[in-house]
Length: 187
Image (tube, rainbow, N blue to C red; front, side):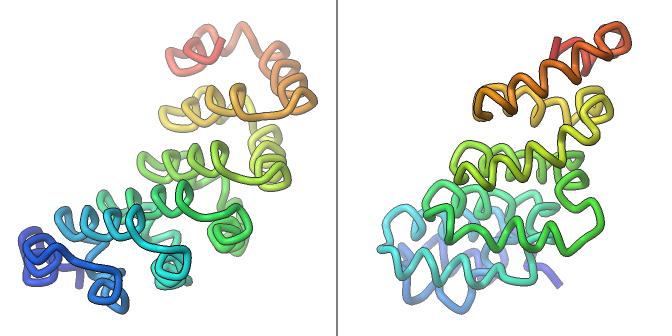
């Protein structure tokens, strides 16, 4: 079970100025707690590359659950910002292991934030992969309450070819998009 806010794991992390070694091995428990997730994010910011990779490794097999957690998603976002693209590939790999995993993440209130960080910090191939999934369901994503944010973000982080494809897809559905409050935000 997830620790409760203010629980022992969070209290230990928040109150003791946690360093990398004391967080390692406890990342998953800490990340699911409000205070603990802040402690893990601090270690990601202040730690060296080895500590960052170790923290990220503790999310292996838990990416989907972390994306749906109101606290752990922040740690996953920080991993996207602090790691090299090759070191955050495991996030996309885990999404790909679930049918339509990338699309489902785009449609989740916390998952969409992680996908946006992947667009910002990912390699060209990673951005292309996300763009490909999005373009296949462009109209649905543009009119979705959370997917719309990813569509809007893609405009800023896609290459010219992807932007042109996105524009073309949106243009083909412009009337329907304008009838949707979420779609209108994209237009």
